[in-house]
Length: 485
Image (cartoon, rainbow, N blue to C red):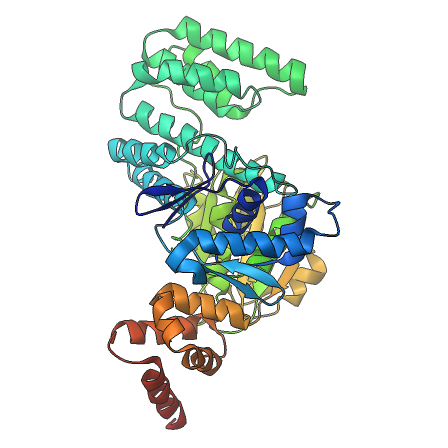
């Protein structure tokens, strides 16, 4: 099946669009797709579909609409199930246009980082081609404004990256008109006018480029009461000095996040708890710590969340594996890598000087820093920016009490998956039919794995290598292996 949310809501099976005519059924399906592969509580679904003040009949009507959606899915009704006071819609890799958009955008950005500008433009255009309009524009929803705004921001960020790639590929004459439209449509953003100025200059039209700067300067002063940022000011000076090939400041911010696993499943509550961190006001850098034992999926959760919110940090994303499972990576080694990624010509020899330069370079920037597998607070402290705007996300087996006490870090203790999310993860990895054929064996397999994502993935990998093997047989083999230790 295909599910489309980047525009009018659509559901397709074998290329045929399935009708979802009732407005509340559309709203219900949209709410489930926005949290695909996660349990959404009945109360939350009622709020999204009917609003904060719902009629007494809402709960009964909700069940009726869910039954109608199951009928819509035909032979795949088991995708939509009741779980722990809520409902879960299973969506497999390649079925949701939002996931395809995210994957194509990541491929394009990676190509741009490697200097493959033509391939970058192709991939980023592929991502944008999946956007058919405003997300869920034919659905009336309540209480999801932040989620829809995030989708709109992601599309806008990919649009800017695509135009940047085309400009780098020598298509300055072709992108001028598009950049004018983008600049007019989003007057508070500085990246579109910066790219427009560069395109006009490369087209031999420096006077027009300077006019764009002046219009942008006046608009920012009158509407926001601010001056142009350092990128626009630098580009303005370069054009005034008739530099033959000016570039915007920091044309390629560091984008070091590891790839997010495509079949990430569950952890909806934890993702939302991390989302709330962005709404906190802070005088300094926001710090979040995901803590817990081995195999809980701390890294996968952190990487997933970081990719979802990458557009909020336009000045870059830094990542380091601090090797906490071994002797640990020295903070100065990490700082040296970060400083080079931020454009520093030299790295000071002492830890204190390197940390001071790092904080200076990140001042007035919005950067996301992902520090994976930290040993403890002392390893992390030199890697914390010193000014507002940035966010640091840390994973560690250590509870990181020192960061909570002295740096006001927000700690998220990770637990094993709930049983329903373990089941969904196995269904995603093995396919629903295999689990439906042996539901009790699937339940026991999840228990044997202690509902740990890593253990579940290892077990699923073994089963995938032996498609002829029944779950019960594999379960017996695993029990025997565990018992022999």
